Length: 231
Length: 289
Ligand SMILES: Nc1ncnc2c1ncn2[C@@H]1O[C@H](COP(=O)(O)OP(=O)(O)O)[C@@H](O)[C@H]1O
Ligand SMILES: [Mg+2]
Image (cartoon, rainbow over all chains, first blue to last red; front, side, top):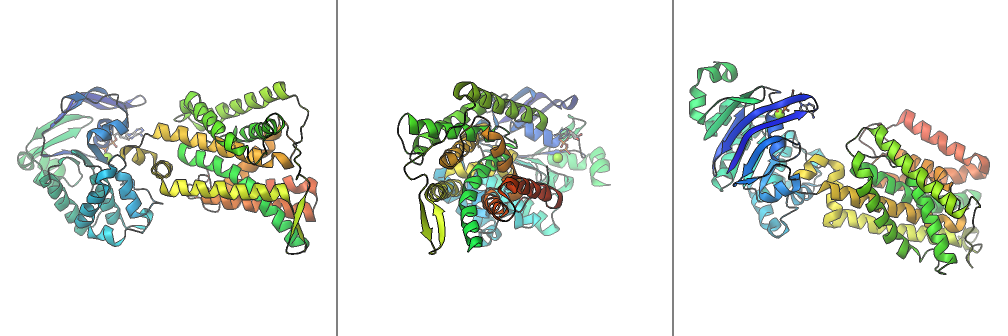
């Protein structure tokens, strides 16, 4: 479904992605793991077109490079960014409506679905986004992504800074999202949990892939255990 | 009763300042660009109203029906041709560009219209009405205030209810997240600059009947619009609305109790005081940039 082939990306002089290649099969959960600052967020930003990149990003066989972000959203690639980036002065419901910006005709039914998935958001529909707790903001960010009828959902550190209860909710939700037919590309610092739900996973250091395999294989890999699982 | 008289005329004038400030603040919020050509755009609005009146015999308040769309289009094109090129650049480049655009406008006006100030005199220019039995209000000021209220109300409705208005607010609150929603943020920038220009020109046209029309009039307006924005918090539309009214009242009070010559000084001191003690403005959250 998504193929990233020998992709390079830089901020000014500093090259962050160095010939990185990953493949995401339709209907799967794929994780990208790696320490802080190795370029995980940069990879997702390159895919969603927020930053320019060199190399090939293809989606259903069509090359995405050079398309502006709103066109990439139009193709069904929806990026839920690191740090949530909700609209602080808009209500919960307005935030969700912004998610449906290109899909007004399915807005109502998606809204019902999101409120069913996150009843907490329904309770706070009139509250402004900036006043929600971190966990609620994360639900809002994911819900806002689902409003856009994603075919491929890019999730950047969805459990970062959340309590164990919210972390559980997030991982359960990711599995539900996949069951509903949406493909997920997940970036996580909670390596154990993300590998546990992944069909395929990539370990990146310093802007390139150093290891890949099924989630289970990587969980058993001695290097992964030593570097990320503290065992 | 002097105090009520000053308060009323201050609020009426402040409405127009608010309109000018809202335009500038909206541009800052959505594009993160300080538009130093804003005052000169107001000056162009004054001339548009003047020529609509003298050449086409259209009442200055009615001519807004023409001035608003024309200036929107002008601003939209300015953004597409020039401002969009510096939107991701450091602030100093943006300042150079917008100051440059403003200089081109004021000097072109100087060439085309000469430096002689002009006065737009309507049949009702010097008439006034009495309210509260002993407070007199000038008719052109009252009319301009009513039109200002109507334009501001329409703008608020547009921002709150329409799809494009909501997209503008989203872009202003988080440009990157707006892109991820599928919003074409470069189009939003052009629309915003068009609206900002439209509001500047409208404010200019609205005060044309009570002000000298002059190619260099923009400088004073820019300072005022900027003060309104800073007072309300850069990027905040409600802040600019309130900020404009406050500046109008402060001006009127200082003209009454200190001296007309000093009112600009008092406004400027208010500007410095806000920068010193509350750089984020009354409503701002973004911090003193
Ligand atoms: N906007 C930026 N400008 C300059 N450097 C950046 C920017 N964003 C990230 N970087 C740098 O790029 C590298 C990769 O960052 P990032 O992709 O955010 O890493 P990760 O998500 O894996 O923690 C880091 O060294 C970071 O400091
Ligand atoms: Mg990151």
